[in-house]
Image (cartoon, rainbow, N blue to C red; front, side):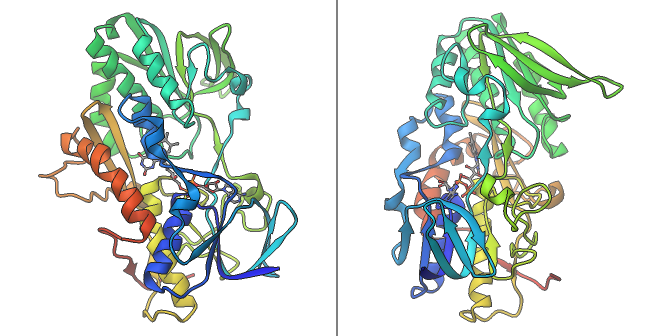
Length: 414
Ligand code: FAD
């Protein structure tokens, strides 16, 4: 079997950032990324594709072009783990040995989890910004819509970028407001959860936009079935006695966010926690049972917001801790992750509520309030999202240039 010092499963936002962070610290280590995908996507840009600001092409790069100098790319799918033998198993049966492993395959969008959805998407007004090829269809629908009923759905938590379902809605509403058709449009947000946003501090500024756009909120509504030809969707709700019922909604347009689960090969592995996610220590990101394994990105069972912003902060933490375990850097304590994640809520074209928070919903703003007040819609935060964050992603985060990220070292019990 092939062998590498460090094997990284998944060359997404987290996997590439970890590889680059390692190589930025120690040029001579032997790192291999394993990923079958020919392309890599800047998914945070898809909200702006659906809002008519970016083209879909701007969010896509050839994966091979992003692999850092010094790392190798193995174009294959991982199907399982043999941690006792320190090997990953590929879908073609090959095995790759490692000294240290980083697990970063993201999460699985469960399009099959809603009856009728997979065959409905892309026609009859059924769209989703959660797919690169469909985000442009969202903007087509928004531009063409003249009144009628527009539904926006949100599945149960956890999902990646928990604000994205409502970002799509606010940008659509703002476009209709500018076109003068919002008054003729019935807009409803059907959310499986019970709150507009998980961190209470950000709910009041969002509620101002809910009122301004005349959106009706339906909590505890979980999409179960959709029929695009009949332009009808069915939602499960729980009554006061806990008994469930299906309610029906007709639509002219529906933006669907699919349920999100751990990838099957993680869920079925010995590396998973009870809910199927990767079982790591919340601060060190080291596996709870296999000390030579770390994790990063959306696959983690930790309570942070699943965002690229979180992966940006996690990458140097994993890199420092791995190199420390290998005796390649000396630090008194491991690097610790505070759960940072960020969700730039696009409340209108040109303004963002820049939610930044860590474990337990603790607000962790990167900017002083006089520059960007995280609890108010901000023009500067929009400029950050549209002009600054994409180059930060491509040119800094994926290349191991750690702007504004200094891993904190602290004693932990694990
Ligand atoms: P990904 O980037 O999804 O990469 C996973 C990689 O693993 C892929 O390349 C895949 O091919 C590979 N892989 C999967 N299975 C295997 C396997 N079996 N073997 C080998 N490789 C495998 N984040 C923000 O910070 N801000 C935002 O505003 C924001 N908005 C978003 C809006 C939308 C619509 C979406 C969809 C996401 C948004 N995100 C946002 C979230 C962000 O994109 C993710 O959190 C981030 O991409 C997670 O990185 P990752 O590396 O864990 O997963």
